[in-house]
Length: 401
Image 1 (cartoon, rainbow, N blue to C red):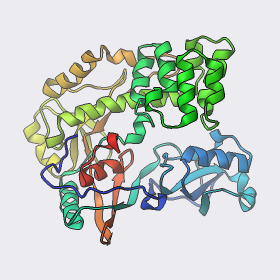
Image 2: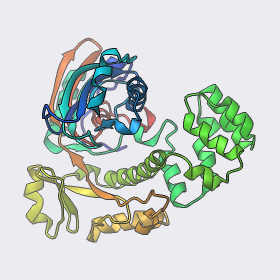
Image 3: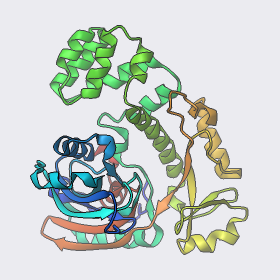
């Protein structure tokens, strides 16, 4: 992996030794109005995912998960605080609600259900341990450069799944290779450490579906449902598209992310440098426009008003022109794909969008320093990952962490 701060030595170390080492606090997009038919719950959780938190809320409040609103998914291996919304009719039940590994810190009313993406960003407080000598001095220099030039807007390792194969699953979906998709869904036994899961994946590859279902861990409910569908006589295609659409769209999104990261890496040493034909992103409102004359627009990029973008490929996405456009079209051609490939049907077609190659690093600071650890605080816009900052600081590849 290449780094924006390649000339600055990293601090080494490790993180996420405990959930409290990695704190994430959601920055809301708007304040609650104090009135309305929805309750916004400010919840702190540790050691569980947002999905699991929603499942526990649904059971405890006796409602459907579809009635719960959230702005973003938060890591399970972290101490996180975020807003979730539920119908105001459930107010009385909150007094008797028990949430393991989570607690409600505040309750407010609002007029609408919380929607995905309705957040301004996230504030992070991360403790990095087992550091090299002079770590604080090194960290300060790296943070200063990232604050000035921006953070590579890479996707986090969680985007690619525990086995790192989510993007491949997305590609197999686009190619309608249902048989290979099923093998990949259960996973490569050589890459699986969990004993039961490993045996299940091996049994599946030996075409012993009953044994695979028996060995699969109880937490892998979606994969269990998939295997049961096969045992009931459904075809591979029927079993694949019987999976939750949210999961299938995640795989397609992971493929989009993988291609974006590849295009970003091609420009890693000049993420703020515009080229003729680029499509630029306005950081104040998210609008995009085509760059006709890069030299005329470059001062705005230097002031971090705008940044170059790369596509999250989809059937409606606007591609760049000239040199940036050639890179985008070359990547698609190499994969034997076109924009129309993203018209997958089954309610899964992906329109695509543009994403800035860099994002601003807000309010970075080192808050605590010990002999072998330091704690760093900073904020990032929504959709951006703290692992991009940590990779620059520690000089590690997220794929190998």
